[in-house]
Length: 460
Figure 1 (spheres, rainbow, N blue to C red):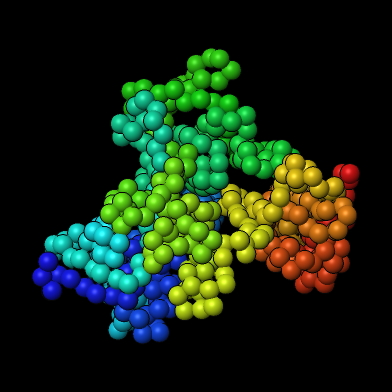
Figure 2 (cartoon, one colour; figure 1 turned 90 degrees about the vertical axis):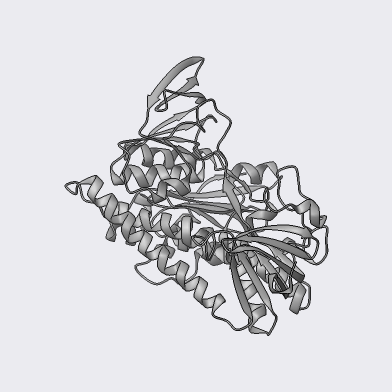
């Protein structure tokens, strides 16, 4: 390896995701020599701004604006074009922000470990090796296509990444998987005008949620025309466009113009040659880390989806805080500090949750009370009527002995914002009574807390 093909850095970051980007930017600003490696020029900034949060939520917004007389295909094609313009802008901005820094170099190519301090990068111009004192792995995760006969071979099979890049609106979309990803896409494409069928192997969709909240979500989806088939075991894809599944002991078929595989994601580690660096992985292929996100090699860290933690961009962001605290701080932050981490399913209206469900709280031995109301019945929430979105329900799980909020499920307009207020209250030990009696602006969705928490429908 000639010196012109060998770069030396204080820090090497593999993957341009949220955590790696923040760490690279921060360390570069402090004068560290940083080399950031990204395998695709379409992924500067990571999953969220390119193929995840930003484009999907932009499609959620645009699907809701289509009127009944708007031609579905024309509306969809225009929406995809507008969304691609947004992601292109974000991608360029992410690249320029880092590569334009004097102390940071961005290399585009496939990275793999040569040894525990050296990474080889196969670029369009040839092979480059980068040697670093510290290495951050931030390669994210990738969609999983299950081993169903004919599924991988069908030209109609798509991952979520494939689907958001196509400008043709499928007349008939079959979604395999009724979890967060599957339901979000089912909601989006039904509102654009596709006929949507969701095949879920479990007895119902959204299996992690309580039965009452899942039932309200299912009713919203079915009222919009989404066909949901629970207890459906997909057997094969026949003749490329026919999905064969078993339900209640009988074989059924549904014809598709597009098949979305929405059965989960796995850490993207296959190409990294981690064995060369002595970096251990878990049974799922995730990089094994401790509470400080150090791998089996103490100078190598893993951030974001690749370490097997919750697959959210804001977790990757928090991972960067933990790693930076190790490298330039007091070294006290850990993954065990995280409590009350919220999440949102962006169906319409969104479902946002935090903390324990009712069934999980009972399983953990808590004595609880449940505050619950359908959105349409919350007198203190006129905003729902103002914006003409009264569907959904709100639920609080409260410890009967301490009055602490153990969890909440908010299926309503503005839920993606409301859940952050609840999560903050939980982290700071604010009681349910204090939150319920707080002063909120009017008309706002937070006012709903005044009614919902006090509307106790069950108590131990």
